[in-house]
Image (cartoon, rainbow, N blue to C red; front, side):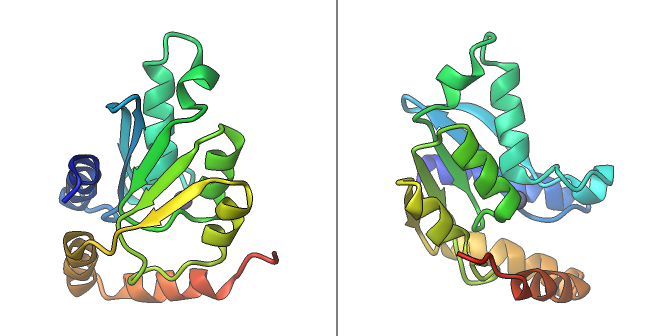
Length: 158
Ligand SMILES: [Zn+2]
């Protein structure tokens, strides 16, 4: 598997070890990871702590003050298709490329089209390990499937 997606997957596993949702993300700039994060909603109760948002926050902390320069043109790797909020942040901060680990467990709710329309390059890998970590989580917490299905019912009007 791609080295950056491997780190995103490590983040997903870290979250699962904390009884959180198994979603991880990294921000990559000039071939280096400049931010990493994992979904921490269950750990913190903060619904904005999605993996991509956390990776962007982490990158901002290490940006030396010029966060726009760091993020503009960067890549985001994420184990799952970004939701509407994260796609919005990706668009807002000028991310050029999004690499998605898999789209089988969380059906795209329109964000792939949304990002592609902003000329963001979206690459879907369908990594078996990214799928496996979600399946492992769902086995332990089957109710999450209902949460995810409920979310995918709301599609972006594009
Ligand atoms: Zn999100």
